[in-house]
Length: 204
Image (cartoon, rainbow, N blue to C red):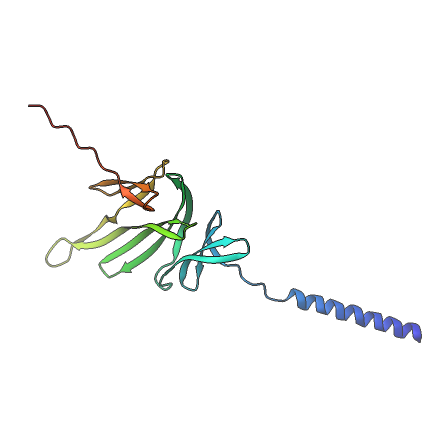
């Protein structure tokens, strides 16, 4: 009888231990943050309807900046964090895109906005902000007064400047009609326009 009782106790102990293991395994795992990009000690994340860039210093985590967006209409995508040096100063270019779609019976517009912010992370200073909007337009146009004949016309519309960073750490802001080059002034902690040399006067 003692042997049977001991065997029953061991069986119950084993069943109880297995049940506890299953319960432990069934605990929900916390979801990781929606990280869009990483570079150096920076991470770009989506958090509670905001595009947030965090700075990590060891275990500590601090917000560098936060930008709200309407999640029902758009989501930040294609985020990039690009470290570079300008006049020996370490800077970071943080860029992302947001798409907005507008639809009517005759016209559809798909607007893609590219945001770029350049920061001196060590100083927690925003250096420059730029945005460019590229819109694809598809429109039904009637060719007669009675609106019996139509055609679909498509065009591309651009607003703002495209921003690029040169290997020297300068900025080039360009659109269809003009191009501006900016260089970093470390003393002022900002980018300044590079003067364009004047053309020599023509000899008469």
